[in-house]
Image 1 (cartoon, helix red, strand yellow):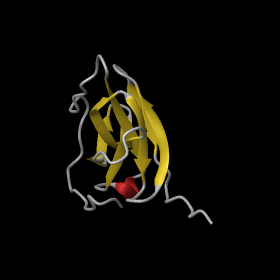
Image 2 (cartoon, helix red, strand yellow):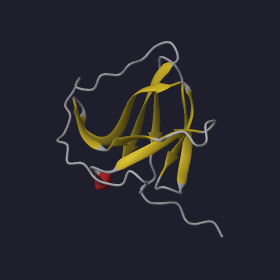
Image 3 (cartoon, one colour):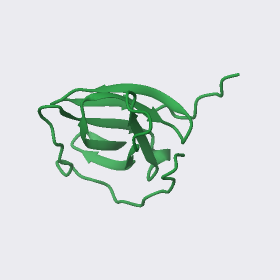
Image 4 (cartoon, rainbow, N blue to C red):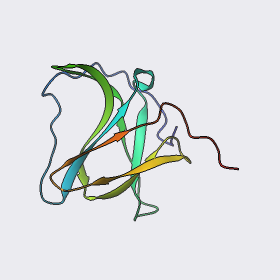
Length: 116
């Protein structure tokens, strides 16, 4: 996990309980995970701004009309490309956030293998 390492015990969120701030140069990001990451914080950072603080969000259970899923939601990110972090040192991918759009990313179920 990243520097901001701790878990949260938020209850599930229901349909229409998350407000996204979309428009102009602001988009949103949803990172889908499995249930096993419930409460874990996932960090993202702009790929073009090394040294800037990372943004984090806790994985919560999301109850929607069609069922239940688990995700971390970033409701108001400036447009750009973001690195998604597994832990403090391990990136798992990148995702582009566009103004006025909700970007989506599926987090792997386990940490990537270390490079040799």
